[in-house]
Length: 119
Image (cartoon, rainbow, N blue to C red; front, side):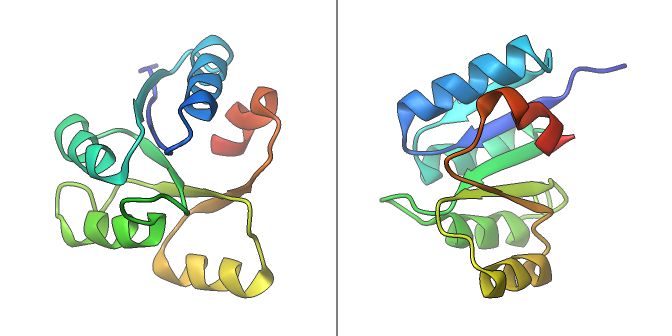
């Protein structure tokens, strides 16, 4: 079985470090982190992770705009994306599903249960 590669894109550095530690120690996955959308886009294009955990609200480019850029690129358009957001409403969930986003994790979340939410 190959090791799952996860890209976490979130401007909250401490949250990224917690997610990275949990996914590596509990899931035994390789975790890449990006603290900005622009760096996340570069990592997605060059590292081609198995899944992307993407924060919705970031200062340089929000998660939905980044998702749109990922979808336009043939290299990254097939990578499953899971959004992480503090604002989850039913209408948003419908919109995300229509866009092709495979899941939404609401913040705050239990980092110890994160592996099971991604599988």
